[in-house]
Length: 306
Picture 1 (cartoon, helix red, strand yellow):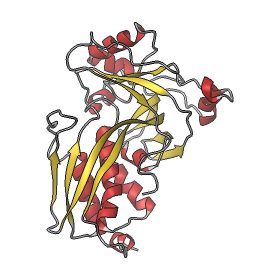
Picture 2 (picture 1 turned 30 degrees about the horizontal axis):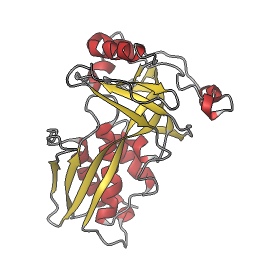
Picture 3 (picture 1 turned 30 degrees about the vertical axis):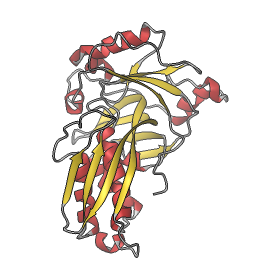
């Protein structure tokens, strides 16, 4: 069965889809366990969805063109994104895979910081894949959709999985994982970090011993309220801190408020679990351009089941 045949569907296209969420993620830990001959790194991580979200809007185009508009967000001027960002690339890839002649105009309200290690671009791409199947009235088989997602980026398949997950390989091995409700303080300094620069650093640790889901889950001790979100470490953090001193400053800021911080992904955002009932601490002294937010983890991806 060809991709075009498998994507055919009796569903009629829609005129528009508005207010489609794309949530960020935090890596509770991130271990690099090896490196493939082709240069891709092998990892183990727990990816956790949080309620810091971008919002996308989709309007059908009958001329086959794919366009994107960066929209004002929460009264702030639109963030200028690359013309060929992941959302546009995802739309083009799906359009080619399903052989549709339809197009789309994408409106993107960007809230998730860029170069933060929070997966904002990857999440936008995954939400595009899910929303555009509905908009265009097409459907790719799950395996084809996952392969397409992986071709866009290592984090994109996770955002299609529907919830928190234990992730291995280069990002394609995904095991659903239940996590208890919790709140986190997420701090993004003004400086960002390019992912490629972190992974190519000579000093990056690439031989962490393989962990297990059972070892991670053992932190729960049978009581969700006592779950230890501090399992493992982020192997990218030491290299990232050398490249970006603001990461260390962010961790020190958390520590001064009696919070144990850790970097997410390839940075530069850091996070710490907040004790139950804790409010957002005073942020008046933060440097200009730093972003801080109290976030909760999500029970499931807002688009789970699409």
